[in-house]
Length: 269
Image (cartoon, one colour):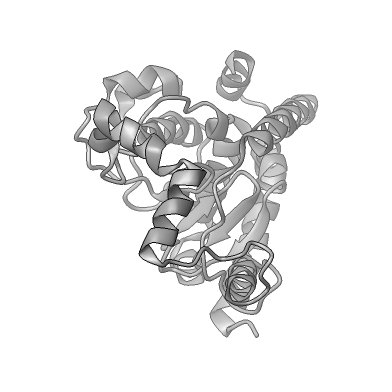
């Protein structure tokens, strides 16, 4: 059962989306494409997106002014519409996340939206794409994005394993460790038991727990973050968001509410 502040957060988000549709139809149309999902602050202290949903911490939403919430909603929608989830490639995740935020925030400021406290804005990055901003950022930049970019996995360096993986000897050892016959022999020698994938015992119970954690219909906040997108999901979502971006731009242009800045940015994406 939802707590009172959860209901208030939902109502506040609904009102902010309505205002965006009326005042900024391009951004409003994109925001409506994201399903709302209340999230546990342990992994989502503010907001986030996996290119499918808008995740939010209810108390954070309540702390925002209505105008600031419009900025936050549009921020997540632009991450998706600009396919930031599909453009990272070889880049370091943290630096890429920063570059994406630096690219988006000036756009929203130019649209007259009000940023919440702590939003990163660098004037020198105005009208630049994330790929142009990325090489200008320092490797040791410890700045934090205002939201969670949940569509892709951390890179090995952030996990502390980049140096080990880059070592040729370790790469060879890793290949040996992954050999099924060697693993089986080692397990037999050590007396370890390899779980049967068809066993419906403990492993099935763990899977049920995981499914429950990611179940959007559960009562209360989502307990665990969504998994990173698969390559097939990335391609499918890239196509969908490109169509949504084009459709939203056309509708806003027909209504006479597509700014020159947004039109220029859409045309170059």
